[in-house]
Image (cartoon, rainbow, N blue to C red; front, side):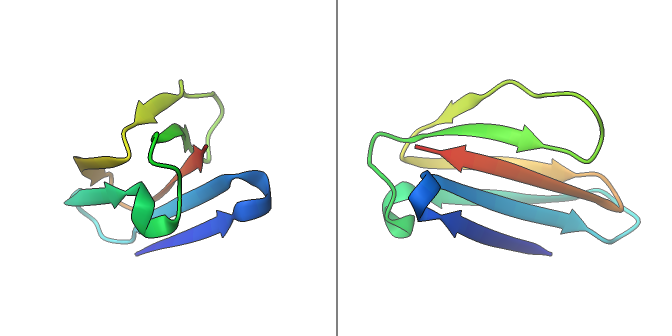
Amino acid sequence: MSGAWQLPDENKMVLFFVNVSDRDVSFKLFFDAQAYGLPPSGVSVRKLTAGPGETANEEWPAVSERVLTFPPRQATAWELAW
């Protein structure tokens, strides 16, 4: 399951992914900032998890493709900021 939530006043978007199955799930994410009305310079991305700890920010270019894999029965989110 997946979803997206945009907070334009805060220059943020959150992408949500939930794997409700008993196996890893992988898929290809095609990201195009312009399709979401985001700046063509790309975005800063921070992975959010339910457990403790912070993950480092990474930069995604305005157009990118990446393979994402999610472990069974877990939720993951990415906060995008520009």
